[in-house]
Amino acid sequence: MTARDKFLPLANLLAIGEAKVATGLSGAGVMGR
Image (cartoon, rainbow, N blue to C red; front, side, top):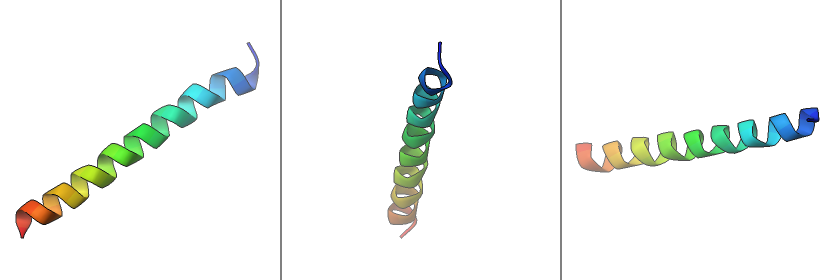
């Protein structure tokens, strides 16, 4: 297993996590208003 094989899934998880947080924040902002 290369470092790249380990890194790509981690990068994907981080990207998904960021997307969820971003949508959650924008959703909360819209709901708050």
